[in-house]
Length: 145
Ligand code: FES
Image 1 (cartoon, rainbow, N blue to C red):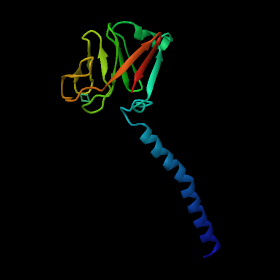
Image 2 (image 1 turned 180 degrees about the vertical axis):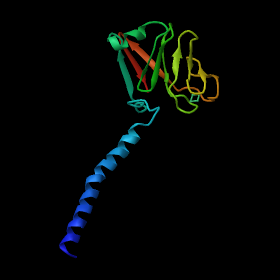
Image 3 (image 1 turned 90 degrees about the vertical axis):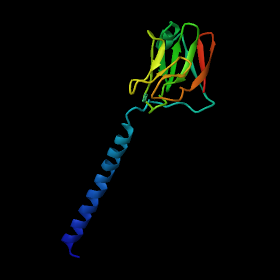
Image 4 (image 1 turned 180 degrees about the horizontal axis):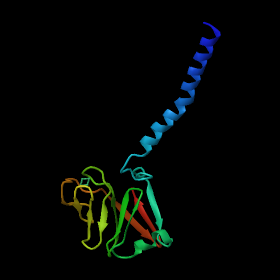
């Protein structure tokens, strides 16, 4: 192996080393762009979520007909209480939303409709939304997972 061959092999190896991090980085960027993934995800079972209703970002939840999604949990003020349901449609995993004028929960992907107790009112979903118990102590709402 002459000097020229050694330099060429060295440069080729260096190119691979320089490109490797950018290839790996682009792979990690692609996987981070998974559509439909709700940031934060649902906390593990047995944990809880506390929401201070006196904070401006949560205060809208004190009004009848209001709703908010927190960590894949859909919170709805039905007027008589606040219910907590999974915001992930049981059909194919789209994010559902509350329709205050109809008083139901609708999936924008294929039209499934759920009641505020989570039961299926209209398919194609066949399984109910998971529901969570909610306790209200003063201004703090606690959702038990
Ligand atoms: S994902 Fe909700 S109806 Fe299909």
